[in-house]
Image 1 (cartoon, helix red, strand yellow):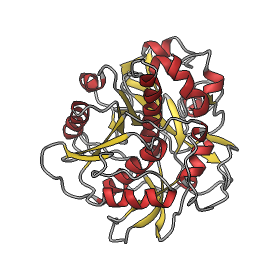
Image 2 (tube, rainbow, N blue to C red):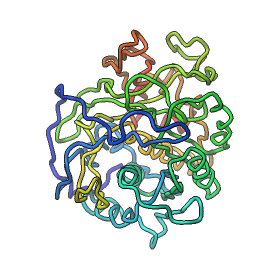
Image 3 (cartoon, rainbow, N blue to C red):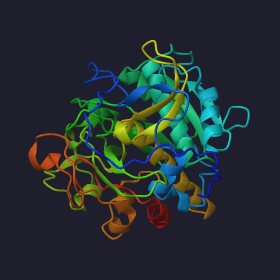
Length: 391
């Protein structure tokens, strides 16, 4: 994906060092029946990009070696409440990093109110919306984006927004939100059992533990890492991020794609996550958000959390779908069976073998192969995308 990103700033030379954890904007679990965005903010707004650039991330994960940009595909971004500035903020982000325009005038961007009425503005969710929209466009800049805003962060409103996204013809759905598991959650899995649509979800940022909808076996659950890179975006390594959720679901059984893979101590339970992506706010992403939060002025912000991985994995699947459709193949749909393949594992993923997210013993430690912090690992997109095109 040889984008002309001549405007990339040399922001930082990032080699990971131990740092105090940064608390999430919304700490702890939301009330029962609600979800929250697992997003972390580092520092205050600045007048210039404060985190990793698009160019660094494209190079770090190998997207810059892919020529397809997601043309012909539509990414559904589902979040709660309204971000009134998202289209204009996206324009600033695109201009800064040399990305193609994406707006309602050229048909690339569309915003839908799931309830039919404009929700109120919420500053924390606006940060999430900025992250999701801007970075999904960064990874798949020729894909269209439909942002569906739920009326509230109540679980029933969020699920309605997921359905609205599907009804509007998206090929992938990014869900950067979650809440504690609950006994009736399997009754909601049908929202994600949609032929030819792939669903991704953030898996939480409060350490060991499983959230829904990431626990659904019909969703690709994304957890977090701390990355080691430099100003050029070279891959220098990754460790499991201490804030990553993960573990064994209490209510979801082990899906067939995991039962055929080497999942440690599975006990016939759904393992979370499936895959990983950068999430540590100390090694995180530049976004542009002018809504502001807690009375602060908006601008360029450095944000992390497992929120960042869901939209970027969704964009990866959009790129795969674009290649498949061009070759007269069907879209990938549920991605579990394709991802969990012993044959392609070593080339398709960065196997992350160190890091901890709690004190629960082996289930809280990253290690060789699948683990409950980073799943299969993070993408080697230059290998994984061609592989998913043929499987």
